[in-house]
Structures are given as structure tokens and as C-alpha cells.
Length: 425
Image 1 (cartoon, rainbow, N blue to C red):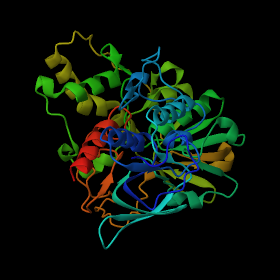
Image 2: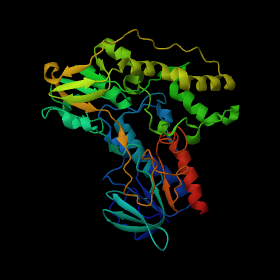
Image 3: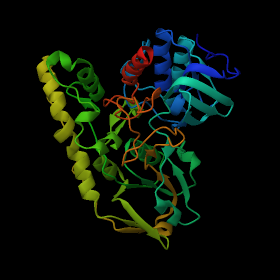
Image 4: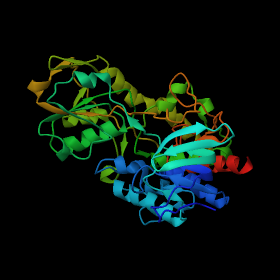
């Protein structure tokens, strides 16, 4: 029998339970749904005082990058009137909370896990802010974006420059008047740079090696083809890539493509940013004496953004479309003829740069899971979420098993697999 409920948040933690799920975001709740279907006793620990998962940390205007139909957590697929629209942040928070309520998930909030240890007599011990729990199984589902990364160079900027990470950014009004330097051109960095530019700010964007994908591809949203291929690949004799098929382990930490769900959903093209007045810069390489230095890699990074989709993802999608027999129109690429002038350095005061937004990604924070081991790149060691420690599992990480492992549309598949392992043990 499950302990606690999504509606009874003052529950005292049990001293012992069969399975503890750590994290009540999309991954943890998907796990709870499958454990509930299997009749397995469990609780879900949530560090925050409310439901909503990592979506609570997104900025005010944030919209889901994948269409609404991709909100397909187990037993709770989107059934609203706008499947091809893009849900805003508060709608995502509500979706997660409603999901927990839909099956009375045994969530206990304000219960941050501070450590997981093996127990000599077998099992695992979870220390929390509200007490200690012994469990046969622990599923760590704390999300794909755990701790914001700020480069060491952030300490070299003048004291008067306000610095926030995209994890802390909420709106243009949060930043002081003046120009803004956005460092990093991943999804978040690009979306924040666009919002600041639309708000009338002068924006400088330090471009990284992330790539773009078209919002619409051959008559459908790009994610429609990606999702269909993921679900139907075997039907047409296509081997779906798993983490074992990646060309190198670093792909697990690769950028998500430049896309946005705002304004009804649209493609982001860095060269168009430059045309519109955003100053494009190479990688930020140094800061001293009130000046910023940039690497001479801007054109290289823009070229990668322009060509990566055609060289890597497009052939797979076209193969699927052909094998499935879809009558899809030809692709019309978004070509923008703009070559930004090279900039080697900037004077912060002269350019009026009053703030920096770090779009420099996230790192894992799993050192508190003490039986866990890590590889040379800092990734936790596991096999489709199953670790070397009996009863210890991971869920919701990028490329846990497939490309969709950390997404609303795919995390339920990994949760189902792990629930089956737990039930069979």
C-alpha cells in the first residue's frame, strides 16, 4: 500500500518502505504511476513545497519547445483543444500537479533527500530533511537539469555587472537598464536573447557550438517526425538508436537544437538574429580590466549550427518518411545570408553592458548518492537506469536509454522498464 498522498502533504515519513522515488517531477511521477499499476508500495519525495518539478525554475514567458501532444506521461496524455500549440510554463506546472492528483500519487513535499547509503543488512537508507527511511529500492529521479554551471570566468567580470544564470532569469525587467551579454547559444540562451531583444534591449550573444533544427519539416512539426520515428521505427525495419549507438559518450551532454515554443512556435536562426540587430560573438574566452575577449570561432560555430541537422538528423527522418510511405512535401531550408563581422574584444563600460545571462548549461549533482559510481566524464554509471548497487536506479537523465529518455514523451518508457525490474526482483 502506498504511503502518503499527493493531497496530504503534512504526512510523517515512514521509517521503512519498499521503494523510495526521489523527485516528483515528470520522471518521478511516471515511475510512481507504473509502481501504482503494479501494486508496489512506495513514496515519492519532493524537495520543493509544491508540485511542478523543474518547470517551476523556467522564466516567466517560457513555453514548452515540443507541441502539446508530446505531453504524454503514462495514463495522462494531453487531450486538450490545441495539440499543436505550445504550453506556457504555468500550464506545465499545472499539468505535473494534475498528473499527481489523477492517480493520488504518494508524494510527500518539503522532504529533500540529502543522502542515499547502502545498509549492511541489505537495502538502502535515505536521509531527508524530515527523517530517515530504509527502503529495498531507491529510484533517483531528480531531473536532467540539476545544478546550474557558471564558468570560472564569471569571477573576472567587474563587480558592477549583474550576473544571472538562465536558471535564475525570469524576465527583462529583472535586469538593470543597459545592454545584456548572453553567454551560450543553447535553447535557453537563444530564447532569452530573443526575448531581451524583443523587449528593446541591446543584446550581445556569445555563440557556442549548438545547432538548429527547423520548427516545421516536410509538412509537420519536427518533433512529430522524431516521435513517430521513435514509436514506429521497428515497424519499418529501422533500428532505433540507443545510448550504445552514440558515436561517442559526450553526445549524452549535447545541446538541444535551437527552437522556441513562443509566438506559436518558431525556428531560431542565429544569422537572422544578427540581421535583426543582435551582436553575434565567438566563445567568451577571457575578461580583464573591464574588457571581454572572444575566441575567433564565430563563423565555425555558425556553420555547425547551419549544417548539423542536414548532416546528422535529416537523413534518419527522410529514411523513415520514405519507408513509412508518407506523402510529405520537400524540405525548404531556412537560409539567411548574413555574415557577422568578427569581434575580438569588447569594452564593457563603453558598450553599456550592465548584465550577463549565463546560458552555460547544467551539471549533475549526485554525489549525495553514495553507492553510485561515475565515469570519466562525470556521468553516473548505469545500464538503462540500473546501477551496480542492488535496488538503486536512475531515471530521467538525458540518453538514459534513448534520445527521448528525459522528455515528457519518452520518460514513461524507461519508468515502465524500471518498474518491471523492481517488480521482478
